[in-house]
Length: 304
Image 1 (cartoon, rainbow, N blue to C red):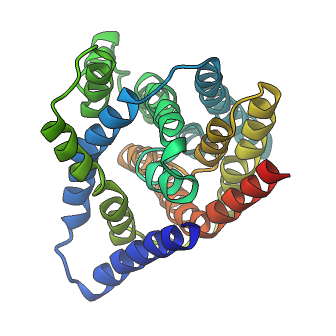
Image 2: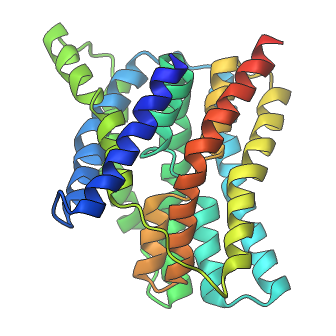
């Protein structure tokens, strides 16, 4: 099971990288696939997963952990940047990439592949009620503030949240309405496309940007996001006596590299674009080896 998942994860990522290298698809193919995953596959998966969700106190703890780690990333980015004399644009880039992890695009296929379907409800809760809230409430404001652009108003923020397809699917899944069997099977087939297509799209858009004067922020960002965050998540969820599936999903989600959208926001607002691309690109590369190792360590801990 684990070996099959690793082959799928590494294989689809490698196919994406190869396709980009040989020019197999147009340049905008990655963006089209990203939209297909986020607008179609992800809502189907969220709907099916949340319908089977049995709410428990540990899921609320999971949301608080996601928010707490996001706030900690923000605080550490500010402290490090001001202590070490990094520019304001580097500071803004680090806030975005430390606050927002790739908990949907990379997180869902990794959690499903490495921990199985039992961990997916917790992964959805961490992403939708944790990371997505941080993105809409904090991420857009940070990008605007550090670039000098106007902040999005409350109305714009609320509209962004309630019209996001995965959030709509989340709300629909909470309604006491059972879908017909044919619709559930149809959505299941669509949701099953998420893992291979998402990983292929990540590989298709993968770039390693050389960094010179931003090596220190890069190393600090990777260490905080992919090492410190999962360690803290493990400690907090273990203290709360979270079930193994919730614990595993929370730790893996906390260990995800920077969100692609966070990197795109930083690049769009000229907040250290090379650093943003490096945190996303190197983070994905490290995650392909680090997350399976972390899942294996969690399995060992759970069996002891």
